[in-house]
Length: 164
Image (cartoon, rainbow, N blue to C red; front, side, top):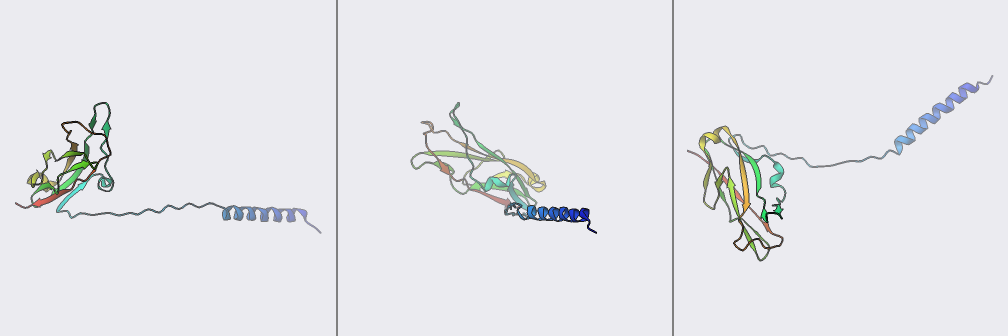
């Protein structure tokens, strides 16, 4: 005795299994790889930007065509020194240069203008508990005004833990 229902059910089952495996075999796969890193500072002394990408990419000063001025760069830093205050200085005079023209930069950290000499920027009491302070880098407009061009520069800051 032949059972057509059984044969039909078997064929439907086999067709379903084959279609599922063939769909799975043709699936497209996409992979993403990225690097992860972390710097964990000592709890005694650190000066770290709140936005960790600030130090890892080029910062662009925006040109305002209405006022013909460069917009200052501003970034916040978390600072701490459990042993005393914090001082800062510039490692070199900061400026932007296009090969012919120069635009000097003024750098302030926690409201203190920095120079090549060490300047106290966070007092001992504030440094012991830690603070969030602002870095500001502003262009000093040349007497003759800004000259069109593409300018580049480097700002190098040095921070010291000052013990009492």
